[in-house]
Amino acid sequence: AQRVTQPEKLLSVFKGAPVELKCNYSYSGSPELFWYVQYSRQRLQLLLRHISRESIKGFTADLNKGETSFHLKKPFAQEEDSAMYYCALIQGAQKLVFGQGTRLTINP
Amino acid sequence: DAGITQSPRHKVTETGTPVTLRCHQTENHRYMYWYRQDPGHGLRLIHYSYGVKDTDKGEVSDGYSVSRSKTEDFLLTLESATSSQTSVYFCAISDYSGYEQYFGPGTRLTVT
Image (cartoon, rainbow over all chains, first blue to last red):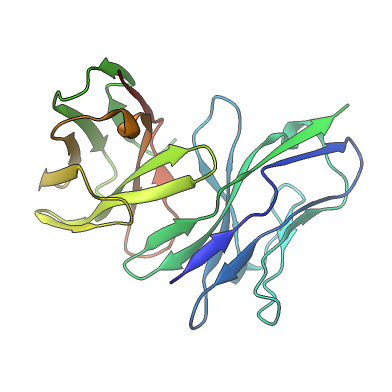
């Protein structure tokens, strides 16, 4: 069965420090992976998708098929990055399978 | 925000009562989804729709039913609410072309 695992429920880093949110997946075939973010009092929204290979708000994520990982990284954290982050993969009919989520807190 | 609204936004109900949540979109997107969000579980798919009157089950569909009689509306019904259905419910939509899903503001349901 397809599964997404985010091993850290909570992650706290200082402003200016590097951030890495971990995501591992199990999927038979070529996965399509995403990071969604939910800022306080805002709707869940797409942050980035691996097929786009783009950097959004300084975040990047590289698909590593050998390690079945899709970790989200940012070299210098900012306070506005504090949010709930979800890793997800697409499963037929545009259905998303989400990980458990990681709450990121950036300390000043 | 994409044109997605959910109603009600908050509801408290008693065990055993029926509850219907509504998702309304103005984007004319084909796909609509209902998720529940619970701590430690992330978001889990309850049911989804790929067109008018076309629906299918998701990961946690037991105790829930859905209906879609119009493109713009997707209803989620709890026939007989239980305390385990206390959760935040999110509706989402997507169109043909991409994989991005657009989420509604959520409905916080408490079953006492």
